Image 1 (cartoon, rainbow, N blue to C red):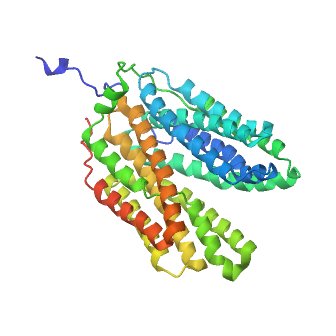
Image 2 (spheres, rainbow, N blue to C red; image 1 turned 180 degrees about the horizontal axis):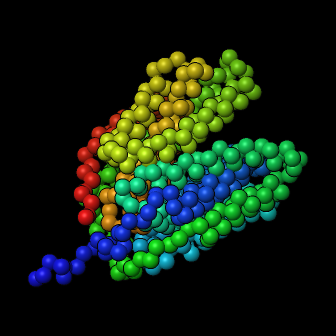
Image 3 (cartoon, rainbow, N blue to C red; image 1 turned 90 degrees about the vertical axis):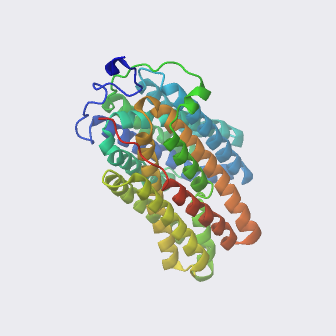
Length: 413
């Protein structure tokens, strides 16, 4: 048989032709959309606890709202990842996802009971889950494999800038609007719809061939062995990677004896802002490094930084400056983790499998976030911070060792 006639799952030469500079219109549009969308829902997230407090509901409602929303989002990512590989046009799905998130977030303003907020948040997070694998697949398709790191690092940097600006905007609007929560939530439509516009007018979709329809199980089976090893490493690390709101609680508790209740709360929030600033700054640096060195080794380094952070919490006297070190390490390792996981995922699988691979990765991360925060919180309450962060330390080390065993296949010529 003529070797040239053998079918291949690799994209054709036309599909993998150089895509020009990495910071093209699509990368810029996706980055700006991430910034604006995160800006929008971070306004609502910052105000949501106080809004629920005005209804006189129990704190358990916040956990229920976040848990249901995150769970729904995780499974939406899995389904969307499988589905998006079968589409010839992905952009309309991404536009719809951003639009649903914007409308769901703004609909907080119509809520008069906690269950209304639950429905609104769940709807917004459903849109967020649907769009995530599509966005990542389109971002990978817009650049060459040699620039995956910079493209994903830029997107993470822009997303985190939204997480910095959002709470600050909520603080400003609450005071400007006289703590009128419905008006504040309706204002989230401005950046939310701006995100939709960025996708609609800046993102350019490359023509792609429709992938043959296969079952979800078959799609999972076809994912290559190196990707599966990578997923195991991510799963172990994620099972210990707790939500960093727990660091805010840690700082508030440890600083209270010296700064008082109000001072400790302000300091803890300030440390979290610093955490997000370092996260935003190092996301692009991590992406730049990823395009110049071994991605598994760099990701293992990020996981090792997480282990150092956990060790610092366990062994250092936690005053203001040592807590600052903990928050800075937290911001840096999350920047490396998220940027490298996405760019390594894109490199480990064929372009025709990007949607499925990103969907599975997002679901594993989502389940890990859910499990880790519950376990670390429970261990903290029962046995103290040493045991709680020791649990995370162990899983961080296992994740770092396992990811070093991932071999990136040679790129097709």
